[in-house]
Length: 230
Image (tube, rainbow, N blue to C red):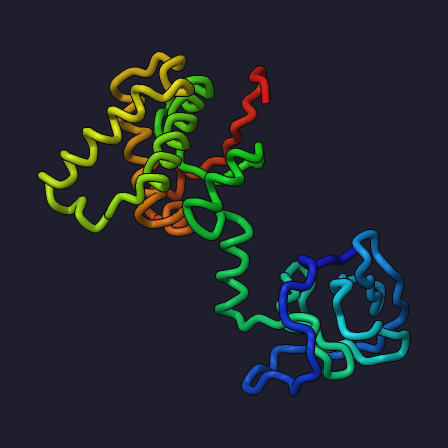
């Protein structure tokens, strides 16, 4: 069964996008309500979902237009039913949407996912085993929490004196953090955590995860580590 992320766009009568011929049209074979109160639309054996706030209800026999065409194994980035938009994204918008779904919209979103116990994409910083690495990731999350709360001006960190001043404040907060204190970090672990947290803060998780210099060190981590209480 083929699915796509639930509808995220506006629902309105609209003309089709101009200058985007990468679509195919199919007659709707069946419409049913899904568990979220939206609609499951089946065309040619494939099923796709649109949200419950879609204007009216799709009906069997109506025309569904999908972007892109030949989308087997590809995300459906646009759906129209009889000219009514369920959602639509250009190729560039869809790439950004996919990155946000995968990595998080920004540092605050990344941290929320971590706090919720959801797996997040990060960078391996230790290379000495999962327990050693988890200590770094926990510390990076706590440092990032402090950076976001204190609203540091990361643009100043290019200046060595300004960075030294802010790093001292970061260390003072980190060493007093109860979640960090119990880990018994080495200096190398602390430095790695600061490095990761500041990059997440400055550049955001999407840029960090897609940095070609660390592409072979990309990992998924979670606050809920095996053997640890949630």
